[in-house]
View 1 (cartoon, rainbow, N blue to C red):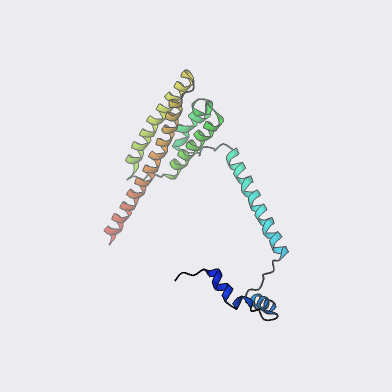
View 2: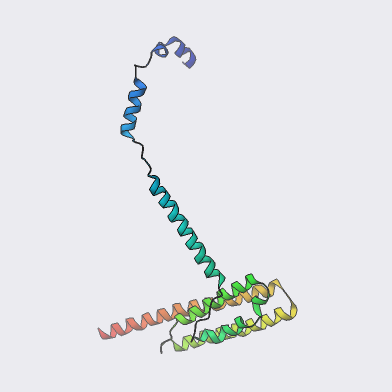
Length: 196
């Protein structure tokens, strides 16, 4: 049953038929009506390009100024007493390299920010104080590791321990904030329930 398609075309008269006159022209006219070409306004395309350039330059400048400046500690917080001592002296990660100083400053600024966000209430004061004691212990360990870094020289283990110490402090503050939020929500629900 299988036939060669070439033999079929040789025997068929279809290949000798011609297209009607002006067929291609009519086809193109119908195609233009169905799918007209959109004319692009050169004015708007230049405006879009200019707007894109302005946005890119703005973001670049903003990023440059943000990463250029060292973060400032938050005033009137407990974080100032814990973190300013580390960031002001040349011990710690800042003494190793400028990149590690940026990492240290990032964590210290985040710790200060988190501490400034947490407002203890009488119900959460004990929990708050417990977390601050843990943070103070980590701060003492950070100072000890910084001195070890100065005396023993550059060590990957010590640098990693310093970074981990900063991470633990920040994670403690995240947990404290969540627990304070839960306790405050629970106390609000209990007061609302009692008033009903």
